[in-house]
Length: 137
Image 1 (tube, rainbow, N blue to C red):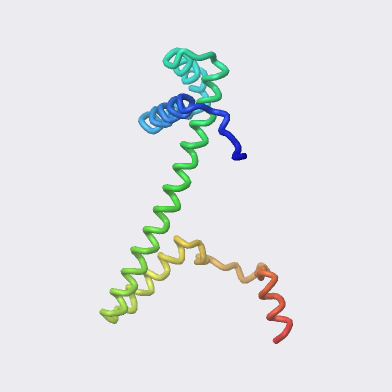
Image 2 (image 1 turned 90 degrees about the horizontal axis):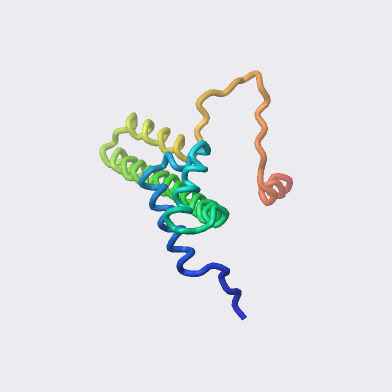
C-alpha cells in the first residue's frame, strides 16, 4: 500500500502562499523577523503559533531549494554560453579570445587554479578505479 502524505492540500496551499510571500519579500527569512512572520501567518491563516512555525519551516525548505536550483541552472547556462563562444572563436581562428573564454568556462566549472604555490605539496586524489589503472601501468 503506498505511503499516504500526512498533509492535506490545504496545508500545501498555505505553505505555497508563504513561499510566495518569501519570494515577494525575502527579508522575512531573516532570523530577527521570525517572530513577526510567525505572528502574521498565525493571524492570516487563523492557526496556532506552532502550526504557523511548521508552515514556515516547510516554506523555508522550499525557498532554499529553489535558490539552489536557480544557481545550478545559471551555472549550466553560463557553461553553454561559453561553449558557444568557444565554437565561434574556433571558426574565426581567434585563439586569444578562445583561451580567455576557455579559462572563464573552467573557472565557472571550478577546475581552474588561479595561483599555485610551488613551495606547497600538491595532492591529487584519484577515484578508486583510476588508482587500479595506475598500478597496472
